[in-house]
Length: 225
Image (cartoon, rainbow, N blue to C red; front, side, top):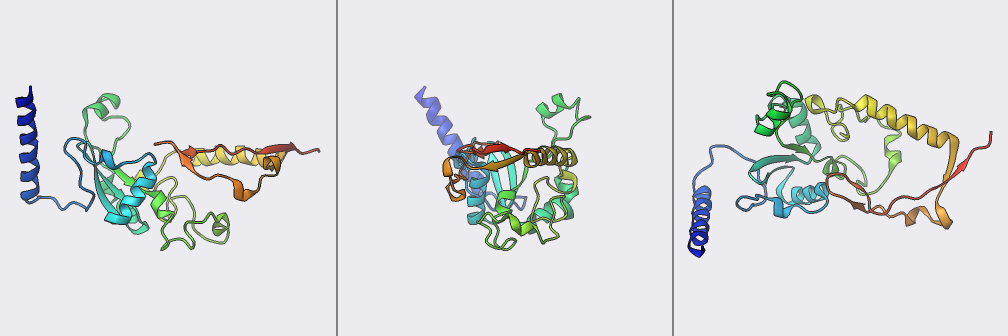
């Protein structure tokens, strides 16, 4: 058994050396060095968007990662997001024909699966070139500006842009606004037990679905009409 493991180790080592020595036919973006088989999975922490932001500060706004053997290009700036979603949108919206996707889409005749391209809106939202005091929570910054969330301004892309924009944007905004307006219209809201705004914990938790680490607690007071 040890002979087979030794042979496998030597084979992987030779494969890595040849891959490093042979010139690549494709001009790929820079990125962190990965490991055989798993790629860069060992470098991804609990909060994906935060990890990608930290890696982009080291490797640049266009970065190549490998999740296993699957390559993923990460765009982390307003300018590169515009290039990917608007200027070169035809190249970034095609469908890789994977076996699993073909089974789920009736041989690619239904929903389209695209290449793994990640627009890191978390990093764009913390770019000092786009926002003043980018690390601070200042909702008033959107009051007197023409920037909106509909995909025309690449500083703010909650629903994406171009061919990669979310088709449910209008429905999502209607549901959000209706629910929020009802809560604000019928109730007054306050923090419990004399808690101050500065005491609110804004830490995050989760993996793909991000939520507050400590749930926000508010006390509603019904309006008297």
